[in-house]
Length: 367
Image (tube, rainbow, N blue to C red; front, top):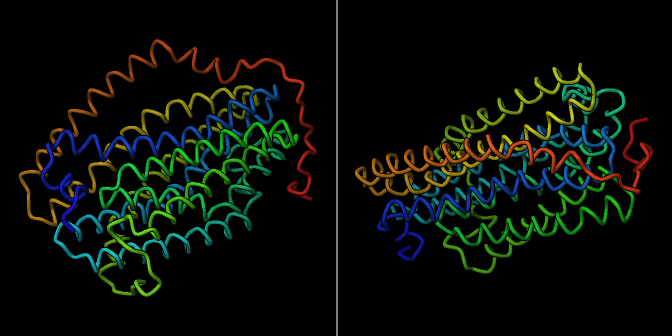
């Protein structure tokens, strides 16, 4: 397993290693924000506050799917990097394949439970009677696309566990480009409104997942995915869930907090709800950057822990904390001076002739 990827995690300068592994993760986190911001941008062009509010309050749906996939993307990735660090390629392969199987099962469960309880779930998001039909359309599409959404997010993280930073970026960029291309086509060209935004988002994730599958099957990665590698070994399952569940709960709590805020804002009208939703999405930029650096440092720490290089682990902690503190100061200044312009860019949209009636996409409306 001695190659450029393991050389990066074991011997490269700490600051260089952190940046090379963290920047792709940050890009991945930003892509998740961008998916929602792109949807919000184009939906804003409809000049329909109800659809803009629906796009805002449904953000927790995306976050919840990401949080559940974090069980694998964090838990399996951590154990994979430790296995690679101690040259245990066979167990790393089994952890990878088992993690993908677990993520697929979790996606099916999330989709099934979400569709069964979709009405109370949307109401819990903070939807008013006027916003509900549009929120319903978006949530249905996102739940039906839970498998590609969750597997594409986990796939990028699992690639980074073996130090494959560039392939993870390429997959994310493919997904983003597909989403940006299809958003205006479905929203305006086919007059689907927010339903079209949801379809474009799922298609973007399908494209990213397709690239990750190709990368693994092409033999370019260190690790391999084979049905025979699925393992029922308690050690592997324990490592995945022991590390993954706390990370999942952390993100789920963020989703719950956003849902509470949405319900509080609902009392002041859908315009306030839409505005707060846009502001919340912008605020997540900073949060996801920090999460990205933490996730980027994870394979470094795991690899060196497996290799017994504790001195390098301490250096990673120290350098990572310094970097994130500096980034936090810069972001504080940027949002202080430019927050108004960013919100105005997404909310104060020119009146569009593409008015989408509430009945559009009627096949997805509740009876």
